[in-house]
Image 1 (spheres, rainbow, N blue to C red):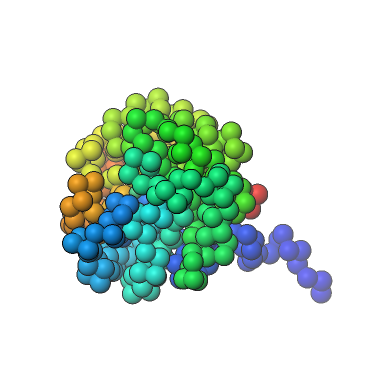
Image 2 (image 1 turned 120 degrees about the vertical axis):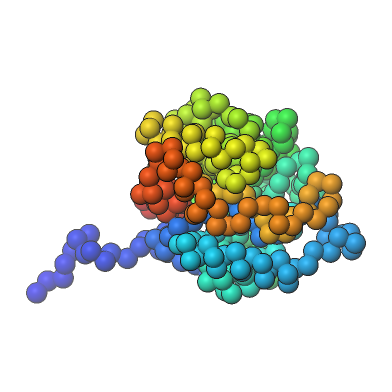
Length: 331
Ligand SMILES: [Zn+2]
């Protein structure tokens, strides 16, 4: 009896390119499951590690992250993207410890933050190609000697608009995206989302590999969301539970409107939470951010009130991240 043609086998292997780097190793993109695309365990202003008076209690932060993640896992969470840029207290080895203890896959990032709050001189003065190669190296070879490979690119721009060093970093990240296939998540402070995307598109990035993030930081007009969606990118409503920026009812209304417009497949939900956060005034603000469970629990109920059913939410949290992380050409 002749073998079944490969294309007709129901258990066709996932293409080798369609794997995701997590801090505990690579997993097939089909194994991501329910995913939060923009969170943090640690987040600290660039340079805080140089101030001994502000020492972050890393063991305590890890323990609290594990506790939150276990509760999120009980609600179905399988993967969390830690979108912390290089200079903002990124700690890949601690993320690995948290992932192992919680039984949740964590994807860590490479890339840099805003010029106003980050981008140390060492990186600021690199040429675009050097930055591109650094980011790509952290994805393909690993972060230093940790043995951990970054699985996502993080870029950010200042609230007042994109400044030259940020445009250089965006272009470098685009080059690293094209070289490695991993997606890009952005930080916008609610502004410059279209402009960020235009820089990435000019550099040749497939918009289907980009989440324009923090569009729910302020009352961004629905027209801006639709413009980004029509360019083919994902929109990040990734500050769920942050009523200090925008009420969740407003977010839920936006999600419902975009679903009605036919863009369910391009919405990403997350909280931009952090267990340990050292803020702009250098104060340690712990416990102020929503728990990792918020999207899976409270916000799901809010969405239901706006007519967005549980089946839609499940697809947004599972199918959209899987598609985002599937390299162009491997869909
Ligand atoms: Zn963030």
